Length: 233
Image (cartoon, one colour):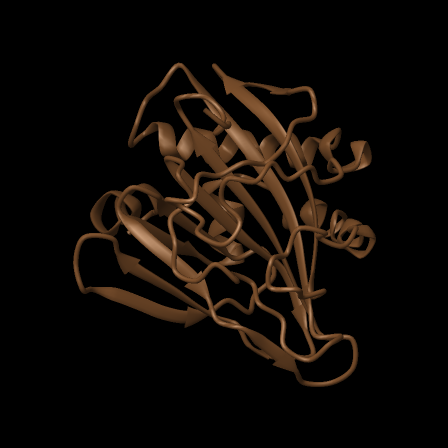
């Protein structure tokens, strides 16, 4: 079953890197050229659990009729109903580097996701937030989702594993938001993709622990929302 079929049927779809290359028509080698930019992410200064395990950058875009435009830099905001730990807080992260967002691979990737989800929900424009994450094990345990199992308050979420090295754990869990069914698996292949209908499922990733020196788990998270960016009332 392809990504659209799985997403329609189950509320989520998991694609291998080969399936990402085929269904999104993206060159994995070009995506690999972006990996080095995860080495220069500033520390997340907003972690309310006092941790120092997360680094990130964040930028926003609008995709309209296949035309991708970057918006002026803005804060990331979620209501407490979706993020009990960090909701209600305007979080200003450094923007994603121009050297990343100006590449053909980046533009194509964001638009390709929009094309897939448009087959499920056709809208005039998508409001996209892009997050580069690095979770490390410098202080021991790193928490990819310190807020626990959650929805993001958007329409669709695309989670790419960029790379992971010298870590164990990090099991991804996706559950029906209105029932008891769910799946658990560990994303290990670079540029594998988890696509989720945020209205239908909740998700989380368990903590990672070191399994050697310099343990990290790098991801790219893209969220797509039809009714504008989330913002304080």
